[in-house]
Structures are given as C-alpha cells and as structure tokens.
Amino acid sequence: MAASSQKSTENPPTPDKLPVPAAPKPAAGAPPPKKEPEAPPFEKGLVEEIKKKFGESIKVIFVKPLRIKIQVEPRDIVEVATFLRDSMGFDHAESAGGTDYPKENQIEVIYHLGSYTREDLGAHILSLTARTSRDDARLPTLINVYKSVEYHERETFEMLGVYFEGHPRNERFLLPEDWADIPPLRKDFRIKGR
Amino acid sequence: MTSLEDKFEESKKLGLQIVRESEEDRLMTLSVGPQHPGSGHFRFTVKVDGDYIVYCDPDPGYVHRGEEKMCEYRNVIQNIPHLERPVIHDSSNITYSYSLAIEELAGIEVPRRGQYIRALASELNRQVYTLYWLAIYGIFLGHSTMFMWPTGDRELFIDLLEVLTGARVTHAFNIPGGVRNDIPDGFKERCLRQMRYFQKRLKEYEDIFYNMPLFRQRTEGVAVLSKEDAIKLGVAGSVVRASGVPYDIRKAEPYDIYNEIDFKVQYMKTGDCFARSYVPFLDMQESCHIIEQLLDKMPQSGEVRAKLQPNPKGPPGETYRRVESGRGALGYYIVSDGTPKPYRVKISVGSFRNMLALPYLLVGQKLADMPAVYWSLNYWPVEADR
Image 1: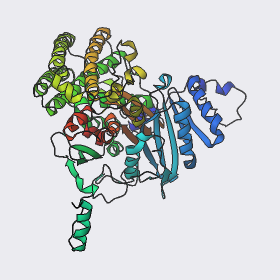
Image 2: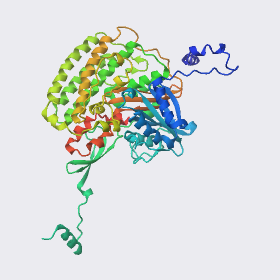
Image 3: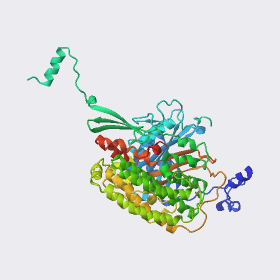
Image 4: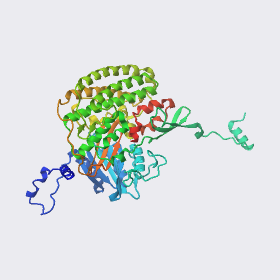
C-alpha cells in the first residue's frame, strides 16, 4: 500500500524526455540531458544586468517567472546590495531570514528584495543570498543599504546565530530574556519530546 | 546679585554636595505593555521629556510561539491549523499564501471554483480583521461608539464565515488544492443582502467617526511618514498606501483569480495618522465590491478542491509566495527537500515590518498621541511574533 502510494507521487515522464532515446547524441548509459524551462526574457535581462556589473563573482541559482535568486560571496554582499538598490530599483527588503544546512556545514542567509518605486518590478522578488560557515557564522550587515532589514537581521541573529558585523544590536529580540540554548532554528535544536 | 553659577561655586567651597540636573535626569522611562490593554501582548519602552517622547524601543516576543520551527515537524497539511493561530481574525489570508506556496512546490492545480471560493473567504476575513482593528482604534481614541458598532457588524461576517466554513474564527478553510468544502445553499443571497446593509453602515461609520472634528484633530498631521521614508523602512499594506505608494499585492502580483476582478488600489498621500486609519476603511469599501464580483463571476458548479496525495510533496525546491492580507503583504518562503515535511518555513508578515516604523514615528510625538500612532500602524503583535 505504502509502496504504491510512493510510486504514484513520482512525476510522470515529461514529454521532453520521451524523444531522447531516438536522439543519436548522448553516449550509451548516460542520463538524458535535462531540459531547463526557458527563463522569461524580462527576468533574464535583469540577471544579465547584474552579471555585467559583477561578472563571475555572482552565482545565479535560478531564474523563474517573477523570482530570481542569486548567491554572492559574503565580502561582496554590501556592494551588490548597493548596486541593486541604486541602479536596479530594488528599494526595500521584504524579509530576511536564514536556512541551516548542517550537511554542508553552512547557513544560508536570504534577503527578499522588492520594489515600490518601479512599477514593472512590483511583482518581482529578488532573493539575495550569502552562505557562511556554521561554526563561525558571520556576515556583513545590510542595515546601511536597506534600513528595513534591521529587525529581520536581529531575528536571524537570535534564531540562527548569525552575527551581523556592523549591526548595532546583535541581541535578544523575540526569545525570552533567560533563553540559554542554541539558536532554535538550527537543525540540531530539537523541540522537546519530538 | 550673585548668579546661579556663583552660588554653585560657593556651595562647592562650603563642601555642600549640590548636583546639577543632567539631561538624563529630565527623562522618565515608561514601560508600555505587555499587560497594557492598549498594547496587546507587546511591550515597548518610551522615554519622555515632559510630555514628549524622545526615545522608543519595541520589545516584542511575548506571544512568540515558534511557528516556523513547528512547521518543520509536521507535514504540509498538518501545518494549516497551527499556522492560523498568529492572526485568528484573518485566518483565511494567513493560510492562503501558504497554500499557494505548497501548490507551487507540489505542482497542484486548483479548480477555478475553488479559487473563487477561497478568494471570497479571504475577502470576508479581511473585513473581520479590519472591523476588529477599527473597534480597537476607536476605543483607544476614546470613541466608544466606534468600539460597539464594528464589533457588532463584525458578527455579520463571522456568521457568514460560520455558514461557509463551519467555524467562527479559526476556519482552516484555505488548504493546498482549494478549499475544504463547497458553498452552502442560499449563501450568495445572504451574503449579498448583508453586503448591502454593511455598505450603508460604512457611510454611518464615516459620519460618526472619520468626519468627527475631534477625531480629525487627534489624527490629522500627527506622525507623518513621508513616501521616501515609508519606502526606506519597507513598511507594508495600509501604512505604505497611506504614504502615497499605491502598492497592493492583489494588483501588483495577482494571484488566483484576482486579475479577473475589477477594483482600485486605495491610497492616500498625506502619510499621517488619519491617512493610515482611513485607508483600511477605503479598503473595506473596495472589499465589498470585490465580494459582490466574486459571487457574480463564480462558476456555478464544479470541483472546489484538487485531489491530493495522502502526503503532498514535490521535488526539492524553494518558493516565495505572498498575498495581500489585512496588514499588508504576507509571504511564505518555503524550502522543500522532497519529503512531506517542509525543510524551512519563513513567514514574512506585514506587522513585523510595520513595527520598524513605530520608534521612527513616536519620537517627537506627545505621549497622549501614542495610542493614535501605535494603532494606526495596523500592527498585530501576535502576528509579528509568530
């Protein structure tokens, strides 16, 4: 029963996979090359603009309709954010948070940037991310670029233990004052009894 | 005649310990909340110099429940009932964007009738929230009629939602794949009838509250948030719309069937307390039109809910989806690792963003204006804490 339900949740073969066996190109045994869905032109243009400025130091994770995610080195993040604000029109950060990846021993901090001023960017969210080591989690703060991240960074500091260099208040915010445990959104923190 | 300075020098020679008043001595620190009825589970410290606020520091977290951590322990369907606890008055909207995000990750198509019904439930719920907020705003400006009327009229919408969903406040109605059940018989007529009544009532609200000279005096020109500052602070919802930014997710990034609905984004340019309290009122009027259109354009029959697997899940990936709630953009950032439980859920709420404007706006205001400024931010502490 369980096995059958497992099987049914798998994705059905997509049409673009089907003609692959007939194609002569791939070597025998090699998996068929997966076709990426075509990125929409407007989003592609935005990414090109960023890439033109910063070149290879920016890693584009994905470009989907209305959503772009890029990853930068921690030392570049302030410069990239300044460029995004001043030249591209991403004028505020909707939220900032983080995700813990213990297997890679990394924490990813993500800023969701949006725009109030540019009408054509109203539906777009640009995710600016940077990764830092779990053992000594430190990132430069973006508070001087985006004032709106002040509380979000404070929250990320206490929930994931990422110290934001230059942030005036890396201190307790939502948790109780007598909290004495590891940052709760790290994966090695377990809810008691579970 | 000896000056004050001479007297001070003289007293030092005599060995008297006279201490001059320092700047700090003039200030008094007041702690507002978390038990203060006007703050609502939220504490902030203000320093006053005489009658004026010179410093404000919010201290949230009294209703922090760890919603984001809880989500990592339950599968996507089990998460719905606890996710609506942060804002039970707007529980359809807070599960709306969650459903949108899960649908995108798992590749679920929602039937059109389902899309209409959940938009309808969300609009009704927005009215419930805004009326509740208006009642509190009224009573904290000393207008007890404005407490009674919205509280009473809120029952209309609660009753409608009870008929629709089976529960009065926490419905768990919007779920990934559509809505839990179909509209009962006679709902449309009842809803339209009550909407006609409510629109008449809204005119009375305007006469007794928004056009009252006392209310105008207490709010007009108080705590002005300029357009530039509103954008810089990244505030959301009615706060940013009151500062002259016509931004509404329903228009900017239409989800479900909102691109088929004809409505205007209500905004004002003054950015003062009056604008921030009047924009939600205009939203209520607009919402009435949206509800009428939704009932009109809704497909008369069909599925309301897509058939789901026992544990809906998709390939590993991440998404960020948002809707316009009563307090502004409400977004979910969900990372999935391919298992039925989300790997990470981040809830981005308007209240948390609007909190940043509180110290900014309160400094320089009179202490007596504090409730008018605080509640004009459309701030719901429980939602901000999550």
